[in-house]
Image 1: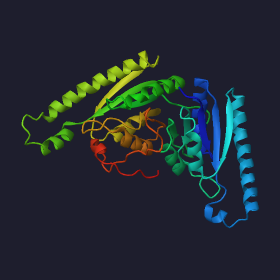
Image 2: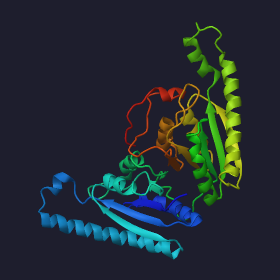
Image 3: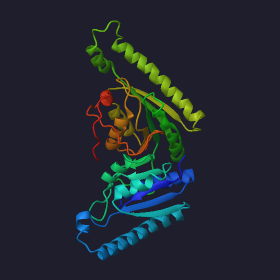
Image 4: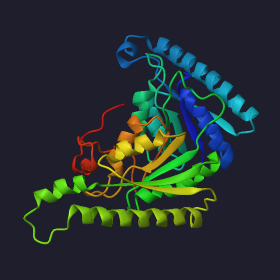
Length: 336
């Protein structure tokens, strides 16, 4: 499914939080790891005040340091029996990474959401945000924490797959099967539908319409449809995706899908796998905006999958609303 695992690094322990996950997937999928560091020696205002020769020397030193740094990590991966490569990219980090990554859309990008900031290094918080919103690749985001950086192992018990009943949201299923197999984890298929209070708010606005279905009837119909969707997705995992592990389903009722997903992901060691778009409407979550919220608020790793026909440089929708009405607003995304 993936051509390789690409790991952007910046020399910090925070960015190296991604390495244990890269090792697991590269080993289980028998694909190479490519370590990449993008660097910009000085900001433009400072660079313009340096002589051309001084700038070239600084760039050469930075590239040599980057090669040495990546080389040390590469040798550690090779000693573990993995195929490992390195690439250095001089230039503004986000732009350099995006321009390079779009050339291989089948590669999985595994990166930390934070790194070391400063003039000579890039902050993986803002860079990760720009990369995520600009490339067609599946991106696994690892929230780094100096106090909880994993050492050698990856402890993931459940791969959580939020669905919304659309074919687009189910494009995450093959990815979930692949990573769950590599992790030796079970898959939980999850769907959130509206409560009677949620539906009643919208029905009250159209109370003059004759023969309008009741909120309770909508809840019942939606629940039945959700359970059928989850059962069909479970069969697809085993029959089409070849997943041989345990599959469980969870249907929840609530008014905030993103909050429900984040809460479920925090109940045990979990990885979330979800697409960037899904079916809109008052009775379904919009996986563009919901994915964005989950990425920003979940402590669990999140694998973001683009729809097959979705070009890069799209950006995720972020609504001002917090509930199922997430699909009704399309605000601009803000850096994490």
